[in-house]
Image (tube, rainbow, N blue to C red; front, side):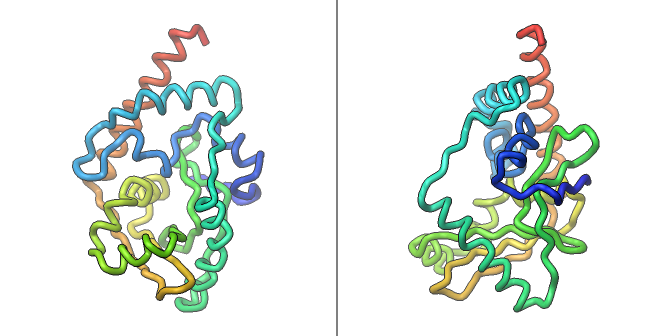
Length: 203
């Protein structure tokens, strides 16, 4: 695990750092949550990664009001966790799995032995989560959370669902070694596909 903590998430430097890198937040594009099958979206994601690797530019800078709201509330959610658990949450820019720097994640925080991810959702989503079952929520973010554990080597990840009008929902997710192996295989297949296509381009 290589931690980059001198670059702030969302900045141009951060975007450049992760250009062409398979990220945990995009693992849903190469692996399914239910049975770990290779995704039909993978080819499109590979093309995007190749473009970023060869140009150094991130060609997808999409954002919307919900995403901006989530970013603004992230600090509030992190502060709630710090106060209620008396545990320091370290903010980092990016975490690479290893020296190859081909795979990584941008956690909302790191603790000594676990990662932290918060989802600052809209009211209707929060209500549906509170009325639903915990496993469905875990499955919705499975690729990202299990990917974070595969990348960092941690055995646990704190998933905080947050909306200021409701009591936060905190779920401690345990590492699924079988699914992490599925992630590793999907990532290896994606990287091979990337390299094969780059050779076809003569690069």
